[in-house]
Picture 1 (cartoon, rainbow, N blue to C red):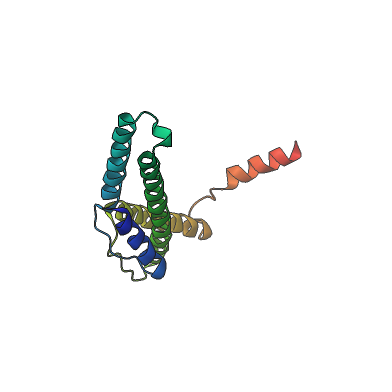
Picture 2 (picture 1 turned 120 degrees about the vertical axis):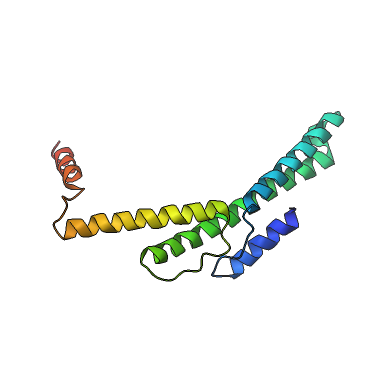
Length: 147
């Protein structure tokens, strides 16, 4: 893992509507890469008299910050796609879930389950087979409006 690989993954993710394939360990690899960068920066900082004015320390700090920002932006873009796929899957539409990391697959499965549970609950309320969940909340809202 390096900054070029991270930026390349981010660039590909921006260009595609679907999820690009990332290895299961992608986020773990990013975390290890950032930890290595921090350790190298800290070692360098210990070796110099003025670490805050050392060019290498500043460069390494910038690289750590950039790697974190790129990884977070990539994650956020991918989560949006995972949420969209989960919505389709919960509606029994075919989805291509290939390329998800382990963490994304767990999120996808959780979202599909939660959307399905919510749909069942709402449909039961609409069919009169379950009490509305908002009846208590509506009463509380009315009481607070009167105060």
